[in-house]
Length: 143
Image 1 (cartoon, rainbow, N blue to C red):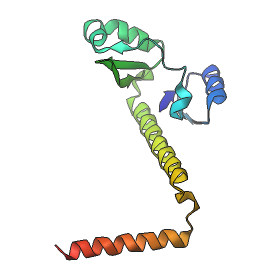
Image 2 (image 1 turned 45 degrees about the vertical axis):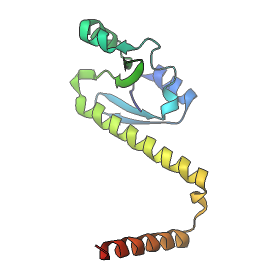
Image 3 (image 1 turned 135 degrees about the horizontal axis):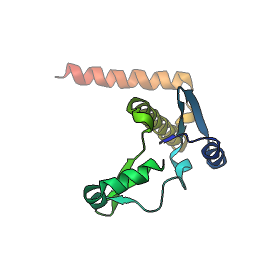
């Protein structure tokens, strides 16, 4: 999950919660943190779809405070509204994509530890790849 860096206080809180990676950019920094590290950063009072539809000004005021807002519909969180500073959508989108990639890698690593794939040697990995390719070629030749 990507969190916009708001200065030393946010960095201090995140450092205490989990691993973090801060990359300086012009006009500030983008902060990428693990999903569990955002606990306590997302406000308890979510925005409902009805709030967004009926009183968008209030939602924008809350976003202007700099906190991400969970968007809830039918009792479940559907999205996370994050403030974009200075209209820099590209940087925010880039941070979100990097955050998703980090979460995907973390899930893959966790699954590898759980299944024991971490202990595979390069030779065993190459053997698995060759076997998978043989199966794929056989399947393609049967068509």
